[in-house]
Length: 505
Ligand code: NAP
Figure 1 (tube, rainbow, N blue to C red):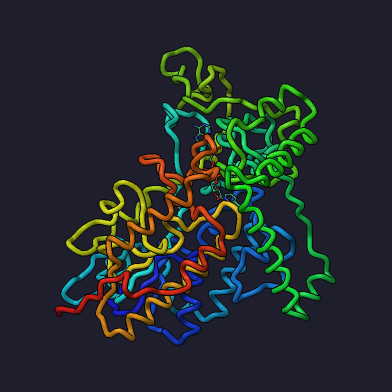
Figure 2: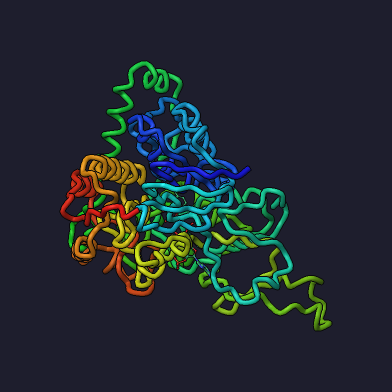
């Protein structure tokens, strides 16, 4: 079924950001909006990531909407399925179901200067929208690394965010590629099924104890009976996380304490000095995301688990085709960069996401017919982490400089949603047809980002990470300061930073 429709706001993506935006529009009686979602369900990350052990390493009472507290979180760090259920419940209970268009992919959004509207072509018809909110996420496009001859692998392989639940891993020889936040959650479950596991580690992560536990029935009853207890818990979790920002500044004394906590965890968990040496990170703590786990090191120590300290470089040539006894249909022998080879049945690529060059940018055409991907050819940039020069009435949530390394992403999303609401109010009150942020405002904001990032672990920590753009080395994904300072920066909408456009239609 296709439709042609005119709406005030078109939201692209039904993950945390798109749903949060939709809830706030609906609660304000701004009912002329639609949320389009290319998948067949809402939930974003929590719909896509279904690997065994998937959960959130930010406490659930903090990793949820402040305006929709949930007294029923079953544990401190909820599993992915529970977070997905929470988001589905948000959609149903906030009356968003009727505004959702599932299986509806954005094909092109083009700014119509004459009418001052976005013309949006989707797989389910056309929309015209005064404002466009891009909420497609930053960790949504799986990154498949350059593993030579990967298609020649004779077993099965998949990315962590595209888990193939149809293939049983019981008794299989499995290679786990990567040691990021996804991999360290997968390994402890993987080792209970697979007969052999090889972990390909390119860089050793810093890991802190996690301290997960179930909430008792009494605690959940108390949360339900007295909502102020949930608010208090949320606030204390927020403050605790905020205190962690100090340790991201290179000369701050907290960094030594934090590093020592991680190394103590390693020492206590891994008695073998040789294995411990190979698990020692060679960059400053916090440069890559700090991981939390109580069972990763224990899983690595199991007899049937091997740690390969170099990356997976290639799949061996298929011997069958050359008549030397390999498997028909591809080789199961994989070769690490260090030269060691392993025979494996399954490869799990926990290799992260394309975050610096979001593919949606190749589908959005702004003023002067300029593509967003061209505007961002040297890296993503936005004013207030949200608006892009030449793309009037367009707001990007969870995009440039809106991620955090030390606190909850949901707080950042709520802050951005608040900024968008201010902008929509101003648009209405000012009588302008559209607001286009000036190039100067974007430039000045990005200079501030560079200055804030200058002496942090993200630029000086001696690592590569998805927080920085590989073309320039600039921090383009992360907000390199405290969450509170982000809220302060976005608290007011300054009209002078925007060109006010008239409709010529
Ligand atoms: P990631 O942090 O980008 O980690 C990817 C891993 O793959 C890295 O260890 C990387 O090594 C490795 N890698 C890439 N190519 C490789 C190769 N050819 N051989 C060996 N290793 C290779 O990805 P992720 O673990 O999916 O996590 C991404 C982000 O998602 C996290 O930073 C976090 O923000 C979010 N996340 C959050 C949670 C949570 O609980 N909140 C859970 C999962 C994910 P290098 O480090 O050397 O590049």
